Every structure is written in structure tokens, then in C-alpha cells.
Image (cartoon, rainbow over all chains, first blue to last red; front, side, top):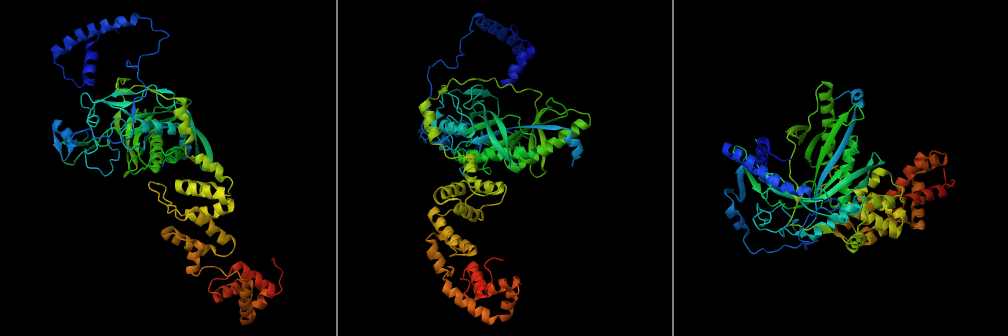
Length: 97
Length: 485
């Protein structure tokens, strides 16, 4: 690990669907590398024999009954935040040709 | 078609991933209705399905219960500890930007199921099965530059069952898919309606001439047993042809075109997926206690293998057992009759029920008209006692299934009850023999063909109500012939 390459940053940007300018790429190569190095301090801790921490709440088995709940709003209101709607459906950039 | 000799040089290896929709009222993490079949677009949705900030998904307990049932149906036990993870990718039918699934600690670990291939059992390993949420449904209106997304299906609970690469022929792949279907139905884990996509199969196929596995392709979203079989056949031939041309098989995802009966390339896996799995902090892990598991186990319905063992007491061939199993209601009924009335009745009634069994290979919807066991047993007894011919019994059965009622009353009202009063039939026999001296003489001289004619005459005289076996017996007696022969 250690220093991130330009390709690493481009890959991360692609996975996050972010478009970066040349300046931003240069900036993130430095900044993200520094963050990574800082977090890497954790590598020095001996965790052998410890179970991985999946949860910090200490809760288990939080479930609900299989019943419909009235969440207290109109379902149609959910569509008001959607940029484009057609016939009750979310209108998005074409996915396949 | 490929040369069978060439094909025989290659070993085919098949593994199958199957998505089963769990039979719940509500979604996996969102308390809205789960039956999206006829619902208007985006009517069964919530802030959780839309992935709005601050929305807190909460696990549906029934989905958990059904997954535990599925574990038993897959020949194993549920894992005592399991957890949920986020699988990240961007796609318009997935508003959160990640799917909640189970990555490294699924609810179901290793199992195995026995499949039936051409009447022979074969054990297929189950690698794992995990719970996850479905994505939304997208459509692509023709002639436009956009797609439409309906999130009704987003968040529907699925169980993804992953097999070991233990199958080597398309027949085995099809048999495995069918056996999963049967088990999910019998265990009451899923409606298992293939037409509505309740079960979808992804088939991994590779071929190789050596001990080493070849590069595999994955054909996704097959929704019938036949397409599983055909997709395997197609891929085996395609891959052998690629290799024989000296080229390499590309590891890729393929789709299935049912009209062309062919697979087609969808995307190559050169850019290995990078899902950045992480434990989902919203969903605390699941720790099953023994009492919870034991209660579900005690409540498990009989599975196909249980019925197969039960039906061994009846003299059936494998095809008949398979046909009965195709309709769980029939299997239950035949088993009940076997338990209460014995194998003879069970056998007779099973054959009647199968008259109503769709012979279609794709049992998507099966609604065999089922009648009460006691009436079926009574009807079977009437046949056993020679009071009703088997043809007449089928007629009575049809009425029973449509209108219900008492079988004896139905038979009487339709004038179908057989005359087993020996004296009455004997009188008819005497008449018939007197009226047909030539035939009677032929029978006496050993021409047994003529006896059929005489029985026919007796049946006619009695308007079909005479018991034919008894009539034949009486004809022989009156002609002073030995009973047998």
C-alpha cells in the first residue's frame, strides 16, 4: 500500500462515478495517499486472535414482523424527489442499446 | 450438431446459482407489500426501497424463518451466526448504490441434495445459500433514448442458492433445477412460480479435455427448466467449437435468447467486478438460538424425498412418482390415502389424480382439482368390490371434483352402479346363451374369442351395469367350462 498511483485514483473515481479534472486527480493522488498512510498506522496493532468487528452496536437479531406498515406518507410523494418521472416510473439514461 | 465423438473427448462441468423469491407478505427490509405482479409501477415502495438518507432497513423475521426452512430443504442446517453486507455497484435499478446481501457469513453453508436423472439418483453439493434483496425492474421503451425504472420489486427477499460444480450433462443441470424447484415448493419457502420469475437460474458452464477446469461462461436469468437444459447444450457446443478452432473461451456473462435458442455475450469479466463489500452497519448480525431452529424444524412439511420413500410402498415406477410429485397437493393426498387406506387404494387413486396432472414439462401453475380423501377411498373401494367399473369411476370422479358430493350417490344417480347380484346376471346369461347358440358352441369348442362377444351381449342386456368379470364367470359356469383357461 502506501502511496496511491494516478491509476488507483482513476479507478476509485470510476467506481464512484466521479468525473475528476486533471487538477483534482493530482490533488487526490497526494491527499488520498496521506489519508491512507495515516490509516495504515492501524496495521501495527496486533489483532491476532481477535474476531473481526462487524458491528459496534452490540445488537443482534433486530427484526420486524412480516406485516405491512403505514409509514405515514403518500407513496407518490417519493417520486417528487426524482429528477424525471414518466407514467409513474423513474426516467433514467438508457441502460441498454 | 456437434460430432458426438468430438463431444465425448471433452468433460463438461456445470455449476448453478439460483435466485429463489421467498414467500413473504412484505419486503426483506421494508414493510411494504411484496406482491408486485399486478401492482401499478412504484406503488409498493417506501423510503427504504428508494434508499433515502436516514432510512433504516429492518430485517423481516419471516424471511429469516423461510431461509431456515430452506436450509433443511437443502439437506443441511442453518448457520448459527450470519450477517449482512453491502455490495456496491451503480445501476439505475438500485437506488442505494449497493445491494444488501450476505458475503462471507451466509445463513446457509454446505449442503447437498439428491437429484433424479433418468430415474437414477445423484448427489449434488450445495456450496452455500444467502439472503439478499432484489433490484428494481427496468424497461427500455423502443425508439427512445431512456429507460424506465419501477422499484416495486426492489427489496424483494431472495435466497441465492449456489451449487458445487457437480453436474456434467445438461440433463443433470435440468434435473437439479427441477429438484430445487420441488424442494422450495414442498418446504413452502417460495411460491416458486417460474412464470413470475420466482426462480431464476444462472448457469456456469465450462468444457475441458484435461483434469483442469476450462474457462467458464455464465448464462444468466434462465427462467425455465428447459432453457437451463438448452443453454447448457448450446454453451457446450459453442465452447468446444471455439477450442477446436484453436481459440480461447472468454470468461464472460451471457444472456439467453429464447426465440433463437442461443446464448449471446453480454459483458466480459475482464474488468473484474469490484464490489467493495463491507458489513452493513444498519443490520445487526443474526444469531439463531437452538429453540428457534428446533421449532422450525419440528414444523417442516414433508419434502420430495420423504414422499419418494413413502411411495416406495406402492408399486409405482419412477415416472409415476415424478408425476405425482409435480403437484404437491396430489402427493399429500396420495400419502394420506396410503396411510389411512393402504397401497392398493393409494395406487388406484394416484392414477386417477394423474389424469388431471398437466403433462407440460414446465409446471408453473398447478391446480389439480383435489377431492376429499374419504370420498376417493370410497370410490376406490367401489371399484375394488366390483360395484363400479373403472371407466364409470372416472366419470364419478369428474363429478366429484367439480361439484363434490357422495360418490355412491353420484354413481347411483348416473345409473353407473354395477349389477353384482349373481342371480340377476345369471338370468341374463341364460337369455344370452339361448339367443346366441353359435357363439356358445364356439366357446364350448375352445374358441375363447367368442366369450368376449357373449360378455358384450350380457353388458348390453344389462345396460352396462353387469360386472363383466362376474358375467364371464357365469357364462363359463353355465357352459360347464372350467373356471380358469
